[in-house]
Length: 186
Image (tube, rainbow, N blue to C red; front, side, top):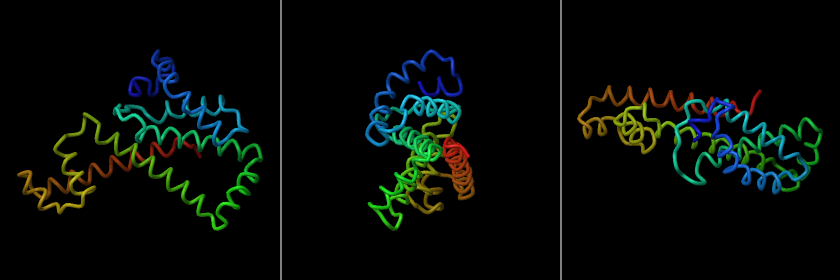
């Protein structure tokens, strides 16, 4: 469904998407940002999502990487709204009481980065246009830490092929992460 609606505001499946994810987003806003207008921020999130996910490859995972990414985008939109309305100081005071050294803010940023990375990795590995053998080489060398020479030998390939596959897949992953991270805006 996400692949179909990415970049197409008039697509009929937007209604289905909104019906599936809006209750979760409303609950998130009510729990974490009850003083903000949830409807506006949810709409901003959906617009940003439409622009950020062209060519999205759907991966059935329930509450996996996409769910975390979507709530991260909504969170960023809510924080931007707080900043623009001058409410940030009250929120920062609350956070400062919880973590005087800024560890909470660092943890939130790290959580956002992890969600973006996980969603991008999920997309890369689910992309049917990427050679399955190259995916395997990437997973084994970049993610599992296997030696490229061992991977090459087990797959009856040259070391150069494994290195090139890893390099290309890493570049694609970096591009996906950058595109998905830009959803928050400047």
